[in-house]
Image 1 (cartoon, rainbow, N blue to C red):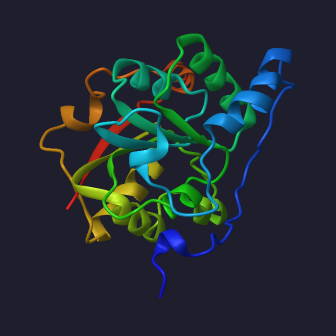
Image 2 (cartoon, rainbow, N blue to C red):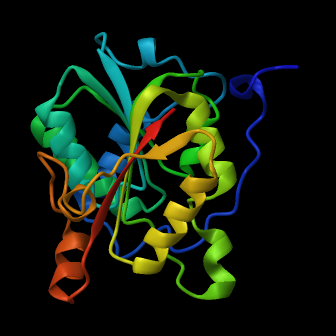
Amino acid sequence: MPDDAERPIAPRRLFGRSKGKALRKHQTELVSDLLPELSLDLSGPLDPATLFAEPMRETRLEIGFGGGEHLIEAADKEPDVGFIGCEPFVNGVARLLSQIEKRGLKNIKLHRGDAIEAVDRLPDASLSRVYLFYPDPWPKRRQRKRRFVSEDALGRLARVMKKSAELRFATDIDDYAAWTLARVNESPDFQWTAQAPADWLVPWQGWTRTKYEGKAIAAGRKPVYLSFMRG
């Protein structure tokens, strides 16, 4: 039987919008011209060692990078780390492309679509860290099956994460935090590393506040920052 990276990708249904307001002229040009240069080729297995023009000391993945605020700062601070960013919303992709062009970064690859499509093309134990910040909470009970965090998704991530690799998760929705902790607790692959309240109430060192997080705090919602280690 072929391994996961060789199997045809089974498309999953993504919910929510893929496009907002009309893009500006240069943003449209970036999506047309620069995005294809940076996009992952998912026609076959991905090899992190050959994704970037120069060798990278490790590879990380950000799932649903939104406007790209965290991803662009992380990539700028650590140019020897390769970053894969996945986001279906074209407006967020266009904003990130503008920053990549402005800063001349060479250590970001992109997939405009479902992150699992990229995950399933990666080899075993190839990622050192995964970021999942403020995913859509799908708050209604009938919508919760749409949440990214699930037994299946955690299993797929576990396959491509190295031993002791870190999964970082942030949310401002109490129910989604509890949902995630419950599923991690049931997972044989991940452990919650918190030892004290500061471990989930204080963001990680070097944290970049996103536009969404700023709105959540202004609205009175308190984010939590959860770290899980791949066992």
